[in-house]
Image 1 (cartoon, rainbow, N blue to C red):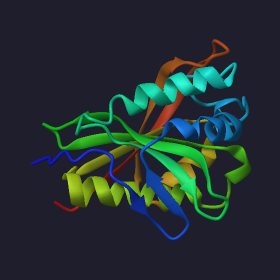
Image 2: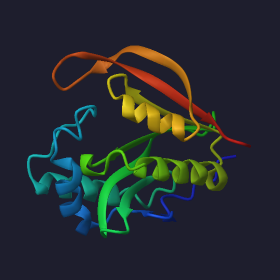
Image 3: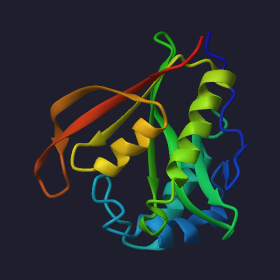
Length: 183
C-alpha cells in the first residue's frame, strides 16, 4: 500500500533535499534554470528572466499541500545554495511505481551529487512511501544521466524510440532504467 506523506526533508552527507521556498528563485535561476547547456536534454528551455523562475517555484509551493507531491530542491550544504531539483514526475499507486526526474546545474556535474540525491530519494520513496518500482528515463544522447542511474543500482530496461521532440525539433529516443525495491 502506498502511504503518501509528501515532500519531507531528507539529509545526506552533502545535501539537504527539501521543499522549494520563494527565496530559492535566485539560486535556481543562476544555477540551472537560465543555462541552455544544463537544460539541453530537458523538455523545458531556459527561463528568460527570474520572474519565470519565481512563478515556477510558486506553482510548486502551491502543490505541497497535496500528500502525493514529491518535489525536492537539492541544497548543497557546503555553499548554502540550491543547485538542482529532483522529483516524482509520474506515479501509479495501483502499480506501486513512480518515475523520477532530476536536474542539476552544470557547474556541479561529475561530483556524484545527483547520485547522492537519487539514492536518498529512492530510499525515501521505497521505505517511507511504499513504491516498489522506481523508473527513470534519459535522452539517449545524455549518457552521463544513464551512468548516474546505473550507479544508483537501476537496471536498463528498454529504449523507447521516437519518444518526443527536442526543443530544436529533432526526434529523440529515451533509455528507461528501473529499480525494483524490496517490498
